[in-house]
Image (cartoon, rainbow, N blue to C red; front, side, top):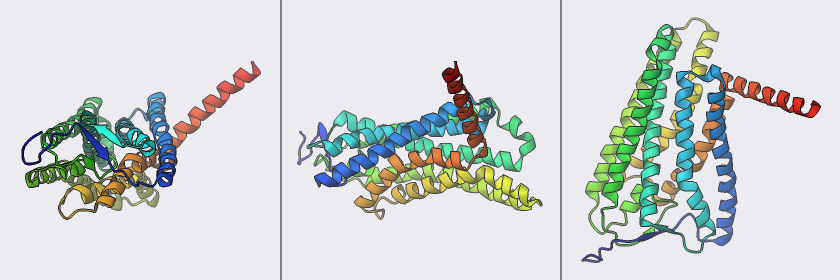
Length: 317
């Protein structure tokens, strides 16, 4: 216990989405179903890429990392949220709250950088296809993936350390999880410097990759428009369509949330955006890459065909 009503709390209470029991039960069922689709969907994408040699390319190496980020992000938030839907007291310990903030923020930052890396991969594939295998060699792909993970984790570690050094006036977090802006609002001290730090870090970790994505797609679109064949243009655009869809969903909501903390969204909007990242986006990503990608659909068909042949041998044998 500090002075001037400053308190170093040992646990937090998450207020969640609703206090109505029936609403909470309905949300529990809905989000449980979505989570049960998210985890197997992303794990199956990872296994499919590992099992099919035709998918052992840079694009699918990065997609494996993206699926790992998505399933980890969802798992860092959703199980605790599901438990709280059915709990009378929605308590999370100080350590668990810090861990949740670290992992969710770190994985979000990793995904932001990873999407920029994937945009560069698509840029090379479309704009310099003859040199693609030379430029996007295994060593470079590994380094780019490591940079994505390290940059997201480093940024998250810095924010987590700064946030949980603040003395708190209350332990009631008006959110579904230990989201950084929601936790900072609990501080007894002036948090303008912390919010400026969040904004600057967001500009570096979000806007820099976003600008790289934008530049990559400007060059990609410029190259596609120069292709004389209509089929060639469609094929070139198709290689980028899935990634471009995910980029539009991911960066749009992230920038809307974090770049301007003071004039940003309401608390309810922040909760809905967090739900989008924790549940909807991780669930949609495997579908987007599966439904819009011929290689992935072909790999699914091959895998299902092999499975059907294996079961047929078992039944006839």
